[in-house]
Amino acid sequence: MKPSLIVSPWTYHLSDKNDVFLGEWAIPYSNKEDNLNYKILPYHWDNRRKAQSDSRYISKLRKTLISEITPVLNKLHKTNLSERSWNLIIGFWLIRFLSVSFDRWSMLEVAVKNFDKLTTRFNKVNILDFIPSDTADASRKFRDDYWNHIFINYLIENFPSIEYLPLNYPLNKNSKKKDFKIKLHNEIRKFSKLIFNQSKNYLIKYLRGGENVFVITDPSLSLKSFLKLRLSLKGRTYYQPNFLSVKNYTHNIKYRSWILPIDNSNSNFEITLRKMIPFFMPSIFLEGFERHNKNNPSIKKIPNIIFTSYKHISDDSFKIWASKFIDKGSKLIIGCHGGGVPLLFNDSKDFESEIANILLVTGSKNNIYKNSYNVGQFWARLKYKTYNRKGGALIIGAIHPRYAIEIHSFAISSQMIRYFKDQFSFYNSLSKHIRENTKVRLYPNNYGWEEKQRWKDNCKEVQFANNQENFNLQIRKFRLLVATYNATTFIEFLAANIPVIIFWDKEIWQCTNFAEEDFQKLSEVGIFHTDYFSASNMINKIWDNVDNWWNSNNLQKVRQSFCKQYGDRDTNSTKNIISIFEQALDSRYK
Image 1 (tube, rainbow, N blue to C red):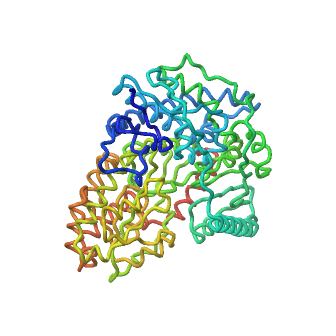
Image 2: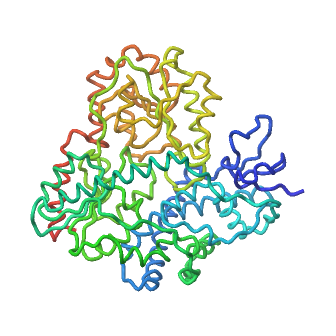
Image 3: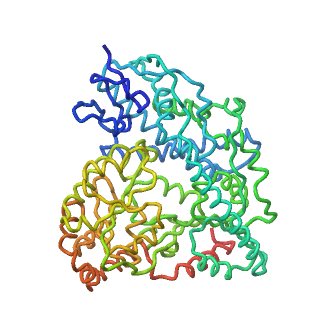
């Protein structure tokens, strides 16, 4: 009998000992039996050289596809937008769709390489039912078990050695409904934010006269910094304008009957990809484009500057609106919405540099693009050197989806299991009295990893911090923070001069090569560690004298130097941003 390929948890309960799992994501942790010898295929991006090579390939392919899609969408919508504008509009979705498609395709290649004959259980569906409404909806679907079950089986049509078998029951495609109280709370917050932003917008629009027009939306600035910026700007400022909300558009085949040139393809994957794109592209870019193109905020004069730190990622309606102006000369300034040390490979950052006129970064060594400018840690949110010297320790956990949705040099998909094991070993290596005074803050969304239960099963004494509590206030209760991944948090702690131990597996969390020397200096003063045992030993050693260790002259000198390069809080970031705006207003400044 041919083994069955289990591609998602939807058919897990039908599996037996002869079956093969496409990845760890297909096995629900709560159902996993310790005595069952699961056949799980090796994850292709565990080979980090392959991951880096694939990242370059996907980045190059994205740019090729943007050039192919631009004339198609211009003709479809009777527009004349540039490639840069279409990159702004669809680029981030395309990064993720390419990563998702290539990841699932590569795992199917692993499957057929290891097994001559396989079967899969699947009832065909109308693929138009799985079209996302926008980029945010697509990102949710890319993480969803049911969507992945359908998508992977859709790809299996290109692998003839895998035979389809019918399912004897319908799949329930309805996702769990949010708790009413949570939905109500979110709606109240959304409405309150709208009223606040509109009031502020009305008050500041005409604060200083002048011919210039500025649009500032989701800038990641404190109120104080924003007001300083606004008072420096001579002209009309639109703050947080209301961009049209996304609807569930009726799918119309006339918008999806276009074809990308198959002759440009170099593999079966690229042929399949070019066929899929018209059918999986979010409806806001096709059926909903005209509505958003015509009915977004009416700003009569072309803005001189459009400034955001988030909208270019999260808001397709904003992107459609902004694209009309950047082709007419508006300068798009993007503030890096996070921080840390640059990753070894990260197409999302490359994408930001492509669409922006100016990219604001937070340290001298983050200044890696021709159009990036170091302004310091302009989004700093933590109160400087504020912590409880008699408190315990707080471990801040990371989480990434079970299904890969982007290819970066961090823990991807099943590599999270290796990350979890490191966390458990670290915690269990702490002295008993330190464990009793240590809490773990989990990310609110566990993406189906059942992380809390994993902690309980591996660390019997574990205590959890309330992950709904305000993060900035919560960390003030502890004497020592533990950062376990390369992202915004660790550089925030260092810049705010709050005692922190940093540790991660550098084979998974890969930083750019030029940062190695800087991390070595952090290691020499006991801040940074590349294995759990070294980190736990350091905490055991300094626990009773954290302040003495942290405030030593040598450590502070190393900390300040590192922050200057990657998260500079000592500079006047608002003044630096004002200077960038003034330069951008110069018509000679590109």
